[in-house]
Image (tube, rainbow, N blue to C red):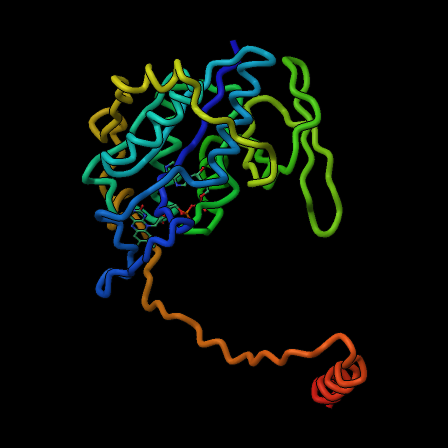
Length: 265
Ligand SMILES: Cc1cc2nc3c(=O)[nH]c(=O)nc-3n(C[C@H](O)[C@H](O)[C@H](O)COP(=O)(O)OP(=O)(O)OC[C@H]3O[C@@H](n4cnc5c(N)ncnc54)[C@H](O)[C@@H]3O)c2cc1C
């Protein structure tokens, strides 16, 4: 049986104009009470897994590490067609950076695996580092294929994908037991089904705490996070906008010429 793990992160819903603020002492995002959603790229990772389920036959198992409110995106994943989900939550995990997060996620995957593939989003909307997927792959000693734009072949024998890489398109045959990260344009995520909405009404994800994962406390949370945010600031934009009418081609030419002279000295 093909088993696919999908990593889902809950992020602030900035597309709904939610104002994200930064804690002045810890420089972490203030997440308390902020409306949250499933990270958009992770939705594409989940859709890819659900396509495997529909077309080839696969069990889809979702994982999210976060506070208890992250259960909401796991319930949503179930309503879209996922089979099982795990909420990885513990006070000891709070404050984890990408190094610690990838350790915790990989230990959860070891405990509940093995998995034929691990899918995740290309990057998270808030942290935005794109480090967690590669971190998990390295810890699980899995090959990794990142930034996948489309799937060409999806079958029990072959998994072939394409990704944009340095101004060219790479076509890659993905070996089994690989981690694949997906982009927002990889597919169109489905909406929850009526049956799914009914199911997720009473559904609760299985909890995984550090009692189950047994990671030594100095490797997780703030203590296990060597990243230190020492300052955050909003960059000042020093650009001015000059509007030109279509008939002002000559003026545009002069502007480009003077800018080029400035650059070339
Ligand atoms: C000192 C410090 C303290 C921090 N404390 C916290 C904190 O308390 N809470 C917090 O949320 N963040 C915290 N962060 C931010 C944290 O580093 C990142 O949010 C988190 O590790 C994921 O990194 P990212 O957002 O860059 O994800 P990316 O690497 O951009 O994510 C790539 C993909 O990995 C998967 N993924 C990432 N994170 C998770 C997750 N948690 N669960 C499941 N899948 C995931 C998703 O599929 C995602 O699309 C802290 C950062 C620092 C430096």
